[in-house]
Length: 177
Image 1 (cartoon, rainbow, N blue to C red):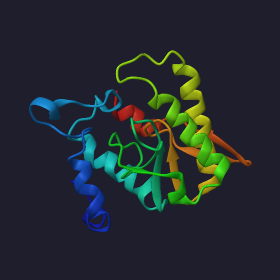
Image 2: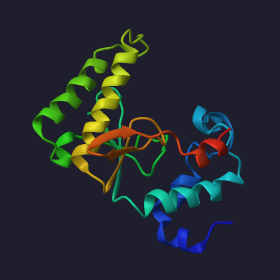
Image 3: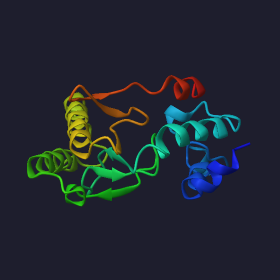
């Protein structure tokens, strides 16, 4: 059972999380689970939520992912760390990003946008490497009060002035196996 203070303090995030595709159960489309969360069980849900609440929701003012979707701008406000929901697409200007970083984000997005849906990205590794470098730049710009990720639950932190991508927290990785 989840602690009432978590449910009260983070009520707006808790409800969508319990209905999130990583924890959703049912028939048809809602049986889909992101491969990362395939091992989650009902027993894992309150434990994982407690981890998210303690380690992320209390720490960060906003959650951002660098990710591609057709016609978008490459940046997403996600509801919490590790969300498989894309959240809300936002423009670099929303954060007041400097022009070189904004242009880099939009150029990366535009290069992927030119591919037809279903068309193979021949430069998949290079594109992912560029996306990760962009996410690191976003973290350096936004600073410590913002959570940034390129891949679910792989937080980007600033260490010694450099942005680095962390591994999925062992606690979460162990739950999803």
